[in-house]
Length: 168
Figure 1: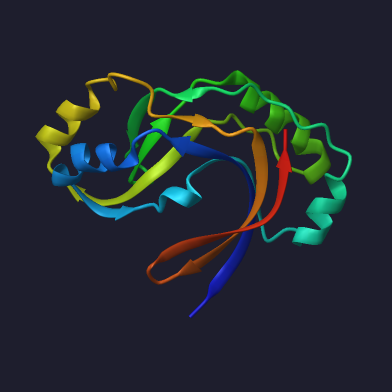
Figure 2 (figure 1 turned 60 degrees about the vertical axis):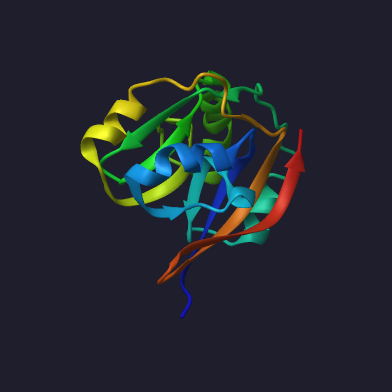
């Protein structure tokens, strides 16, 4: 049964070796890994405030720009129970601040990340030991595009449907 269709804008990512990340953390985490083809950094969550056509019309002449960066860290957001890959990229905050007035968004501070897994439970000691060890090399890179997605929540998790892509 489909519920709650929501829209968001995101930058797609390409991981260099997702299977290796999954093998490295898999034995210590239990949860649902995200599908590699849907991995992204959310820039603006729009929810159900406007439809896709309205969003696309408002952004028709928008000048898209941000600096590409690599995903060079990982983290665990305990409040939302997600294991993530991270990037330090101030240009994504700047992009959000330019989008906010057009899309009637509140001021917000982004924590650019890619959700890799929704975590149900984990082996505390080993997971945190691995989490405290930074990746030996970058995990992936931001692709030069922004995509308008529709997120549809299902009992087995959210499914993301790309509706429109703006290449940089």
